[in-house]
Length: 537
Image (cartoon, rainbow, N blue to C red; front, side, top):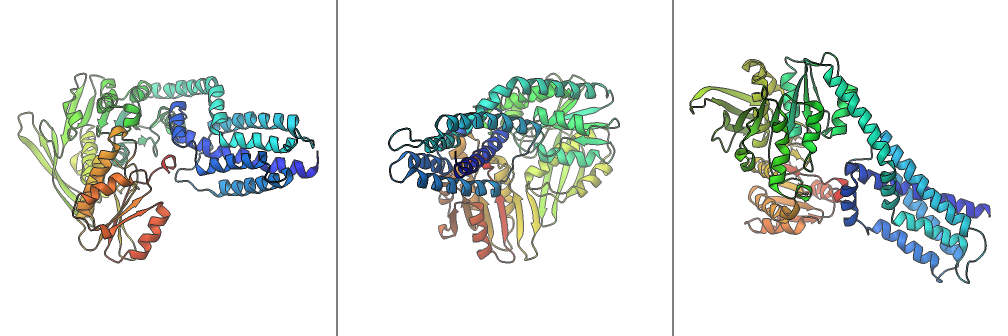
């Protein structure tokens, strides 16, 4: 075998190995769950990236060019794609955890073994038949692997399944041991279709005024995320652990509750999120209330009454404290008289007796804006009050809470443009509130940039059409990004008297930014509503 041929094999082999990074990244974004990963792959089987590999297979096996020339072209394309793969930037890049390295290693071993078998079988200098050379067939096998790169990834996941279960079990037992050793630790669970991360941050800021508090960082709201938090961040002197609990299917919240055994909880919302996996709003409600079901009779759960599903759900195993802004019937705590400004918001909290009489009312000032943020603040205030904190301490903490990044975050640029950043996980309730906040900024043009909402199952088109209607009512310029929800949003916008000359459809956020930079003026307000993750690009 010549040195030239060996170099071609190596360069193409490097491309094959780099190609797996994207597939494993998507596996990680789908929580390493084969069924979710396969659902994603079904929708992305024939991308332009993969079709290029298929086209190169046809080139290698065709009679259009001499094998040596077609192999050189294929190698050059593979080198180019390798450079693209290394330079590609993602909104949520692959995190190289030990688990990722295990999957990457096994995937690579499987692929390299097949590739080497092809080289040994066909990779000499001889022709198999009149027009097919052995090296061309070997490279065709490699390209077949890259075109269906998810196959060795899935196979690696299956092969590693017993190993991962054993490792996870060991980590679970270690986290359980740590929690059991801390008899005075107060554990608060937070879940909801939306608002749970913001509520976690607000509650953490308030409780930290009095208690040594730990919260699950970022979006560490899966069992393994919680386990990692306990094992790596829990201190012997920690007094309160705030545990965010995420879910995409029945039993997810119960699994986390079985680990941490919360004494109190907050259910922020029950809405149509992740309907592709939950299938129905009833299943969403049952899953969120797995938190309430896990709380002992001596504990309590704080429930948002502004959502019909949660308002109708009875809680009998522990004390249930209900709060609301819109549906205040039966609420023990109510937020009212909400006023917004460029500096933030003011609002009043009423504590209502069982008889319906107001026991006390207190005013609060915050840097946050948006009814959804006030609702999340109210839940945090209730939890702090029921943990024995006084009003003045809570009021001081509320006034100092910073806006959570990408969650209705308001800031002003040096050029005088106000930015409302609501780019994290848009939802039907939150997006409506964000647009209503945008509608209150009347000093200049109101601009919205959005790709719409995702993971809404059969309701996705209808809910994005409703989003479009709200855009038409509350903005002056609309920039719709990507194609996934474009038709539905545009239909909703056109149902209003919105000037369609100010409606722009672009293919990416890069293009949206270029358009914005050419049109923005001092005094304008721009709302970024959602930013689709890489799995939906």
